[in-house]
Amino acid sequence: MEAIDQLKELEQKVTLGLQEAYRKMVVFKKQKNSPLIVSRNGKIIKINPEHILPTTSAKKS
Image (cartoon, rainbow, N blue to C red; front, side, top):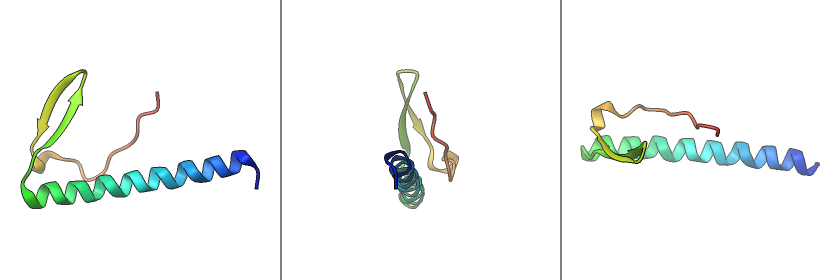
């Protein structure tokens, strides 16, 4: 397997792991009725658990 193929496979595994971690965090936040704290444009924002999306997509910059 070439280095490029190994990097693509690793990237795919990391992405899947991050998606699973996000899914588990959403379940936890909803069970505990705890807000999700995020930063948007340099501002701290609380998102109520009922408004947290069950999935998210990664932004590529």
